[in-house]
Length: 244
Image (cartoon, rainbow, N blue to C red; front, side, top):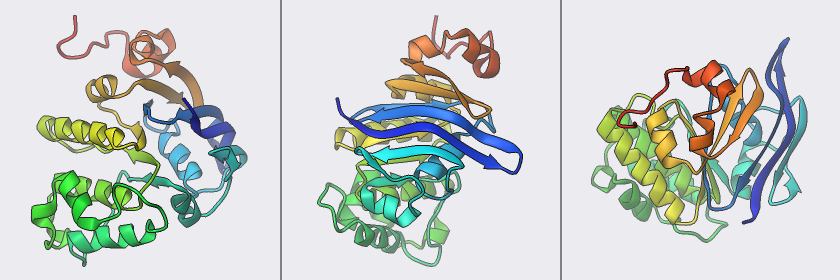
């Protein structure tokens, strides 16, 4: 299994606060990686530094072995790293199809499964709303549109930042199935979320951050039993619904 993304000793400081404090991690091609941890642990900052939203204070980001540290966001996206955001991001004055068409135009240099807006909308279940203004979408469909926009850029790696936030149980189950379908199409996925039932079932490997440090990295069953993870995040009485 080849390594797509490598992060070495990554640091990001905001004034006197270290949001990332020397993080090392890798993302392997084909996996669904989960990144979890308390609020303020550095998860979104990690995605922001990888994707060029913020420049790192120190450390290295490598994509397919090439140093991309500090490259601007548009260049990182062109290289093949797409993302969704905590806040549903779309051009509210444009239709659903227009939003996805713009994304596909930016990803047109690469051949892939998601180069056609209608195919993307079919995939995420929004084809019937293609002509609807993005401003009229409900929250769950806005989440789907954000995913469609990210896929329209034809990423090789998708970074999904809290895609299940604000969704009910049925919407979360549908989202998890959609992420699995994305993976089945050959897109590697790294996802941040607080829904531990979803993350434990969805992800093949979990990384846990706390105060900018990586404190665990391994299969979900091992991470859920890690004393440090139980102490700082899951709690000593952590138990998934339906587990024994």
